[in-house]
Amino acid sequence: MKVESVLDLIGNTPMVGIHSISPNKNVKIYLKLEGQNPVGSSKDRVALSMILDAENKGILKPGNTIVEPSSGNTGVGLALVSILKGYKLVVVCAENVTQERKDLLRSFGAKIEFSPGNLGSNGAIARAKELAEQNPDWVMLYQYGNESNPVTHVNATAPEILRDCPEIDVFVAGLGTSGTLMGCSRYFKEHNPDVKIVAVEPPAGESVSGLRSLEDGFVPEIFQADLIDRKFMIKNDESIEVTRCLLSECGLFVGVSTGAIVAGAIKQAQSMEQGTIVAISPDSGWKYLSAGIWANRIEEVIEESKSTNFW
Ligand SMILES: Cc1ncc(COP(=O)(O)O)c(C=O)c1O
View 1 (tube, rainbow, N blue to C red):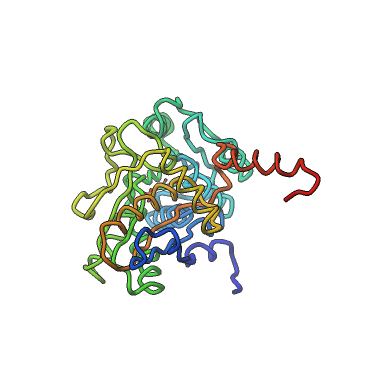
View 2 (view 1 turned 45 degrees about the vertical axis):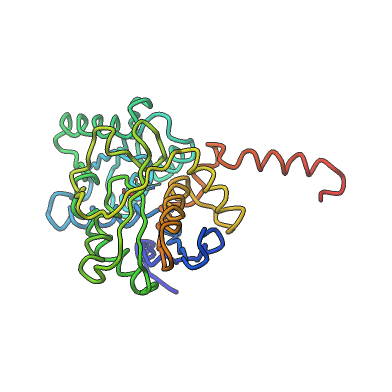
């Protein structure tokens, strides 16, 4: 493959079978690896889509400052597009995001405004809205309410899935802004209405990086309940356990929300007689190393290596 700009590398991500961890041998599970986008997540698609739309509407002009609440992925996607197109970027994130996320954003020249860690992504949204009010010349693209967020999944993510896996019966994704679920659901309802749409979210009060519980009081403006057929609540502990299992059983180095989403796909597979599930892996594991997800295994390997024979 040869392209002229890194932005042309956004999308067209691969899908890999993880059938060995399906609890039902008659149900296949495929994982779509969005971590293979240029700066590492499904949000590369959303960032490009929101910026192109704002440019087309004349809201965004070269030299403008963009402000956006983000747990990191949308921020770094916007940072990539901004560096190429000459925008300044302020990303508002909770102060407890991992060091890798802060370093990544700053490497691309983005400024970070921290919101209180205990308020999570809702705190980041509130602070970004405040900053946008105080600085009327800044542009907030606002992924939670921006139609170009779901539209990029209508136009690209879902068509890629149907092209690569026409036998899909069930689609499983996590709920953050809800853009992935809303956009893919809209496409499937039109092009293959038999596909069931399954959402994964943490229980109220629980935090799984990148996901949100609607019961925590904030419902994204783009969310439409009737586009979802079933919902699984997955706790952080279970998400981490499945994230580790994806590495040890399938060789996949993915982020924690992928663990939650695959935990949901496993529960879905248990309730089916046969069929094919496609689940989304929003990002890869790099940004979660310092959170200690694989720390136990790393320690074990260090201990094992202390012996003279290695194995
Ligand atoms: C790591 C991660 N997983 C899942 C999601 C959820 O995707 P969406 O915002 O499309 O609902 C996000 C969104 O921020 C994310 O960053």
